Length: 297
Image: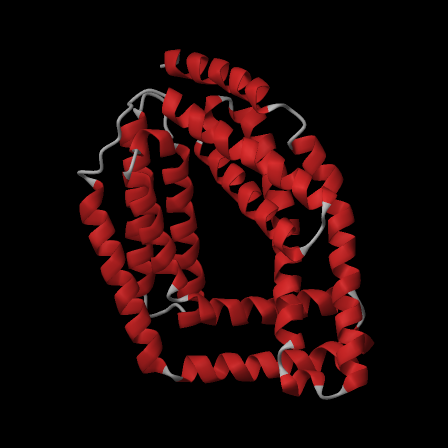
């Protein structure tokens, strides 16, 4: 959001930019198709975060628009999910040592790379998925100009930011009280939205909000790594070829669980600092930021 820009214009501009950039990435033949899918899925997450920031001002339109971009990204998720598990294997190998990589992690990684290659070799399917994604984004872009936003003041953005923050606080409490893949995944999603909102609102007080944005990004990456490890663990447990060699299988799962537990320990103190304020106190503070910012030239 820019100084002097209305909420309506700012959100429309942000969403329009993300759609246009996603269309450019789909059309870019120099990009690897797996990279294209990764990039455009991130665009959809940013669009959904922008919509969530003004959720109250969108009324019934919020559910429709949020589902539109969620579903557009979901249709192309399988390739990215496999790529993320390969990256997670690499990060796991880096965390431990090379000997562990050769004996435990490498066989699993090779299985995933074979699976990814199989997916990517079906170029007709990949091209069709990206064409469908492109069509969905074009439709969304055309609809954007007439999207009804009921409030033009910063109250709508303040309400959306605080609602997301409150849900992140609740998700953190649930994850700390009952640490499971699902509770940590829910916390991760809420932290990501808060991070995106701090990016959108960073100019309300750049020094302070950017510091908060950076800490939210750090926590989001930690929780993202936790989620990726949980997804990888579930995939290995359900893959007959990966579980056939009992010693390799058992050692791999043990290392995944060890790293997952470590991330849980690291994320909790960071989260407690980031979400220390009560939502109403954060709302009061940011209301002042908004007020001062709106008076600046």
